[in-house]
Amino acid sequence: MARAVPYSQAMPDTIPCPDCGQMNAADAESCVRCNFPLREMPAPGEPLAPHAAVEPPGERPAPSLPFEIPRRRIARPRRPGTTTGLPVSVTLLLGAFIALLLVFVAIQAVMQREQPQVEGSNQGQQQRADSLRRVLAGDSTNVEARVALGDVLFDTGNWGLAIVQYRSAVRQDSTRVPAMVDLGVCYYNLGDPESAERVFRLALARDPHHPFALFNLGIIHEGRKELEPALQYFHRALESAPPENMRPAIIEAMERVQKQLGKVAPPLDNPH
Image (cartoon, rainbow, N blue to C red; front, side, top):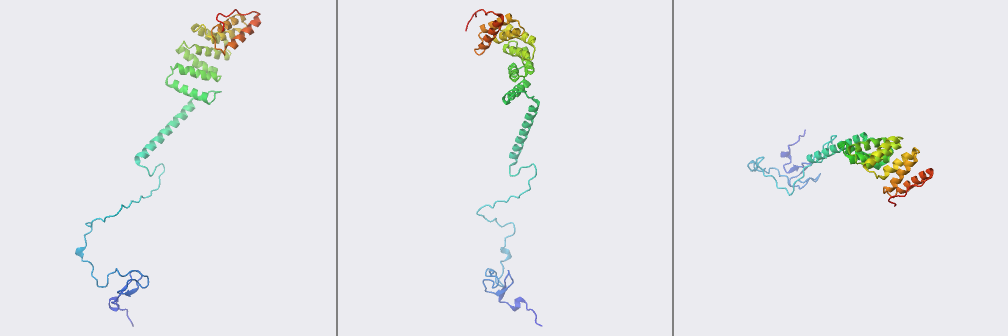
């Protein structure tokens, strides 16, 4: 029975291919089966380098590389609510900014809910009213803001609300004659000519030649069929240098009353 002969004894002049195991001649440059290079492999019996020449681990100098190999970042799953790829300081600043923005939006929403809608106002009037209310929330003694808010309410026909603002302004500053006149007009528009008359007379106590207060008192007396006092007030209003756009209304009122009385008003002291 034939036996397998040991490699070292049977084929001393051949070497195995380390890749496929094919036996090749000792002087072959490559494997006859897979072309694996064999020339750089040590020939049988070629001694290895002596151990003394081998440098101990850890003492070998690091190889000099022509460039630094970049470190590959490990991809991590993104966690809810976190920001990746940004420095910690930038992330914190961004988070703080977002938090402040959310607080601001929340405050604005609360303030908008707290500010009542001005009935009959357009967008500009509503924004004006909201702005004035915020001013008054910080300083309730601001007469200018109080009068301005009353004007917005007056212009939108909110007579009752305008009265509250005008009365508060006049209490703080009794020289505000235009505010007094507008306050009287609000009372009149609400069907209270008696309160309107009292306010107009207070305005005339401050400014005896205020054309609007004089004209409005004439309207009240005309409504009561008190034509003589009405004509006198209209006449005084025309003498008090009213605005040009107001003069036609005064003249029309005077003619209307004169027609009912059957008389002519006295000449003006300062005709225009």
